[in-house]
Length: 433
Image (cartoon, rainbow, N blue to C red; front, side, top):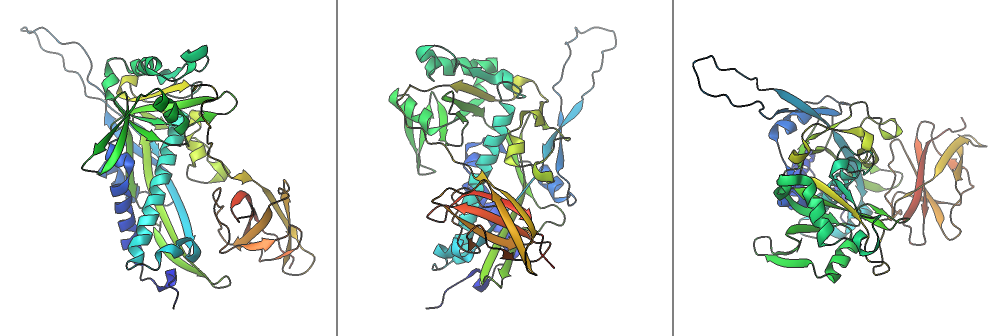
């Protein structure tokens, strides 16, 4: 029986990009919950952004101010309606999948639709990670633009440091009389389990969405182990938010190609590449235009988004329905899953002994039970933690010189016994002529 590959599919790039974006929006929990709002004007600005542009200006009207006047015969004073703007950072992200990554969908009756669904699910997970990274930055208790909206009870004695009804209500009170703007809570699974033990989680069935929805004190619950957790202090952050607090818009800047297919002939691998340009911006705040990006890139990473100094406050705090509670959970009661991250390898390249060869060194050395994989390309990408590194990768013993071409780049990955990535690094190749 013939094996279907990406190359066999009649993928129309513009339609695939459009369909994927539509499906991502349709399936987005953030969109369904109302946490994010969309403005077609922002999408138009993204579409008009030249290649390399990374800032989006979002104007708004300032609230009306001044006192009322008592009616009389004298001329009435006229106040101005003033405007201001927030600056959002344009996020441009990309991902490539090979035949092996998508092989499980090729046997269906609609493989293109199945792939689009997989891709949209993946992008929704990444959108939530983007939002959580931003919240981590703006809600930093020391330097965050919204530090006044952070209640830290983690240093309290005994059960006062543990999340519960009283300190949740105290956190809500940080919004003052605008407390009713809050409607959703994001928490770590360990926090969720603690609240279950307190019997404070209520579950309702939504007949329209056909799903069960959890609530804590009336706030819709979202559980994500990407929530900030400090292992040394055993402290957690729990976020409370209101509707429309984030602006979320897609677009396609000039020169950016949303979907491409490619083939690595030497590896006999077909590749699907998908790119997105989006804004996920906390309304009421502004991105620092002088923020420095990771690795000299033009666009912000999640690490940049989580840096407190990259954000400034633009509006009155009551108009920003975001509140954080820093707390502990009952001591020793819950096993805490921590989302692992990809380790960093320092990779260097120098001329090899023979023509066409390069000598690669890697530090720190791999764990004794692990092994190395590598791939060479003009613009390779690092894997994510736990990603299976088989298709497109070559096994390497850590000492043999590698055949390559000057100007290409190499990605070296430390993998475990299941070929899953635990650490990785990249270097530009220097090859003996």
